[in-house]
Length: 170
Picture 1 (cartoon, rainbow, N blue to C red):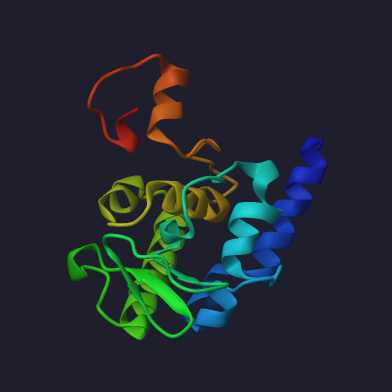
Picture 2 (cartoon, rainbow, N blue to C red):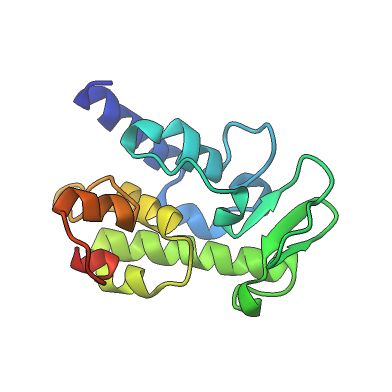
């Protein structure tokens, strides 16, 4: 994919998921099974050419829709069709509460990224892969502040560091 195609893809993402409308996203628009227009499908699959967050389980999204019976996992609660991280109840204890938290995270990360506030993003309790991919997609392209690598381990490889820095210090 050439640079023009990457920018076209990025534009398509921003047109489909504008920063100003993230507060209006429903759980069904956020994540589903076999729906190729959800926010998470765009993050992981459609925008893969802009940086991959593939891997791990769907739990990285905070809440996810199951296609079958729930699997017993530590730190995961199950509803009728959704499962979510309990994370010591920091995200919430109900499906609605967790999604409210997730939506606030997405909006906060997108806003902070656009404003260039990486420290605020670093402090947000959420999957690093997901929050930094969101940050990259919503940064102000007129003054970019991130590269499209979202794993601390991969960043350390790129800068040949082995220290205890936070994501923003690398």
